[in-house]
Amino acid sequence: MRPDHPIVLITGASSGFGAATARLLAAQGCHLALGARRVERVQALADELAKAHGIRTFAGAVDTRHTASVDTFVAEAAEALGGLHVLVANAGLASGTFKLWETPDEDLEAMMRTNVEGVVKTIRAGLPHLRKAGWGHIFFIGSVAGHQAYEGGGVYCASKHGVKAMAQSLRLEVCGEPIRVTSVDPGLAETEFSNVRLKDDSKAKAVYQGMTPLSGGDVAECIRWCLALPDHVNIDELIVKPTDQGSAFKVHRKA
Ligand code: NDP
Ligand code: 8X3
Image (tube, rainbow, N blue to C red; front, side, top):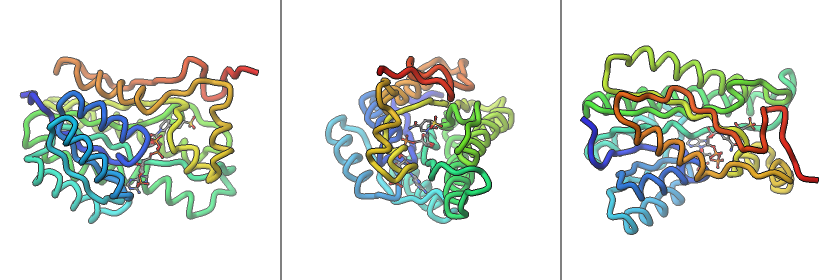
C-alpha cells in the first residue's frame, strides 16, 4: 500500500537533477536518503531539508561504480529511515566529446561504469527493500541520447541506450508486483553536466547560449508527477526537452 510519506533514495543528489528532486520531494513530505561522492554537499542538503520540512533524512558517501560502496549506502539508508519505497538511480555523467575510436579508457570506463553498472548496482541493492515494503517506484534517468545517437557522444549515447534497455527489462521482470518503473529522459538541461563533460566552464556555458534549457527543477517536476499518479498508472518513458530543442540535432538559438 502507498505510504503517506514515501522514503526516497536518490543517487547523485549533490547537484543538478538529484538535488532538485530532493528539494521538491522534501516539500511533498517524502523522507530522503541522499548519496553522492561529495558527501559534504549531500549532508548539508539533508540537514537543510530536514529542518525546513520536518522530514527524516540520511546522507551518505557513495560511489556507484563500486558494489561495496552502494551496498553499504543502501543498507545504512534503509536502516536509518526504516525502509525504502522509491529509488532514483540518477548518478551519471558524460566525460568528454570523442569520436568513438578516440575515446580514452578513462572516459569510457567512467561513463559505462557509472551510467550502466552503477544503475544496476543501485537497483540490485535497493529493490529488496521496495519488495519488503510492498509498494515501490524505480526511476531511471535516461536521456534524449538514449533515443538518438550523435557524433562525439558514442559512448555516452551507448550508456543511455543501455539505460533505456535496462528500464524496459526491469519493467517486464517486476510486472505483477506493486512496483512501477519509469525512465525520465531529458534533453538539454543546465546543471553541472556540461561542466563535468567539457571540463571548461565557459565552454559549458556556451552549450546553452541563446536558448532556454531545462532546469533541474523541471526534471524534478517530471519525477514528482510520475510518482503522484495513481498506483495503476505507470509512465514508462517520459522524454522531456526544452521548447527550443527540436531533437538532439536541432536547437533554436536567438542570434
Ligand atoms: P550533474 O553533474 O549536475 O549531477 C550529476 C550527479 O551525479 C552529481 O550529484 C554527482 O555527484 C553524481 N555522480 C557522478 N558520478 C558518480 C559516482 N560515481 N557515484 C555517485 N554519484 C556520482 O548532472 P545532472 O544532474 O544533469 O545529471 C544527472 C543525470 O541526468 C545523469 O545520469 C545524466 O547523464 C542525466 N542527464 C543529464 C542531462 C543534462 O543535460 N543535464 C540530460 C539528460 C540526462 P558527485 O560528483 O558528488 O559524486
Ligand atoms: C544529456 C543531454 O543532449 O547532452 O543527456 O546528450 S545531451
